[in-house]
Image 1: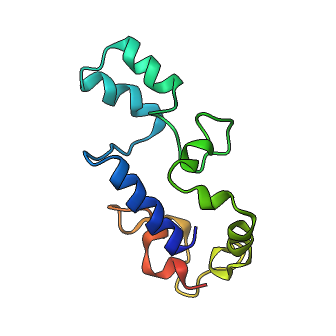
Image 2 (image 1 turned 120 degrees about the vertical axis):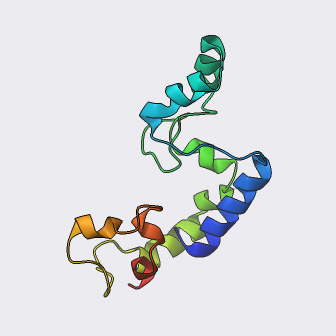
Length: 124
């Protein structure tokens, strides 16, 4: 996603969730809710409503897929914005960034964040 849209997404998400949000593997979500003392009925309601356990760019069907991002970034569904993303050479995954590590395992040198936040990632 282009940097300007990503920053817009994060700012809107932060505004809508001022107390923060746990980021975890979807398979660990129930464990986090259990440890927080959330009753099972409430955990099930939150999951079914798509309020927890969804991946922002998951390709699966809503409510646990793309639709949750619509409330934070409706621009992502505008044809001109989609075309801009498709035309952005930095987002063309067939082009390797010049300073990308030689091995995929080396992409994860900085374990504190996803490699897509690395300086070299957007150098396409």
